[in-house]
Length: 193
Image 1 (tube, rainbow, N blue to C red):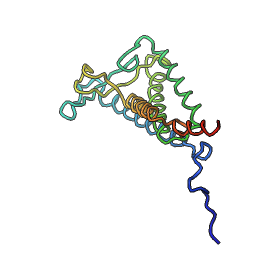
Image 2: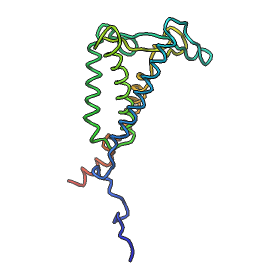
Image 3: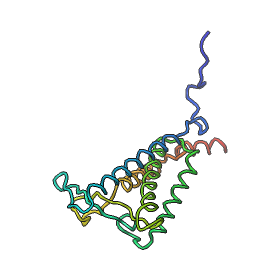
Image 4: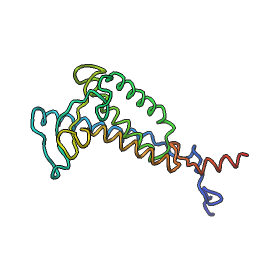
């Protein structure tokens, strides 16, 4: 007796319903990004407060403590409360997409964005001058100790940018969060006609 072929016709069923969910990967990625961000900020505040910038890699990177009331590149410094609400909206949107997530790339990308957003939200809620107005701890400066070449940033910012770039690349390649591709959606639409 021969075992039944689980894929008659030779190809596995790759419909969205049969692809594994990736919410767990999103959560793990977000937790790793958040943990690394929080730990490095605590260390930066403890070691860099009141000290001179630390030069690394021949001046390619400086460790220097800045407290940023604005967004990336110190934009919107007077709108800290609005930035907090936008970050909360991003977190809610990602959490809503998570149950339908079936793409590894999208899970990693959204996990990085989620972890980074949460890392900066922790600062917004728990650092001075107070809830919704807290200043974000930034401590990484490229090529100059004062942020004159590239704005001073933190690991949360890096996670958000890396995740965002990954999501843009996936979208340009036609890969969707549910694991389908533009070609698969087009083929399915043609079959239904």
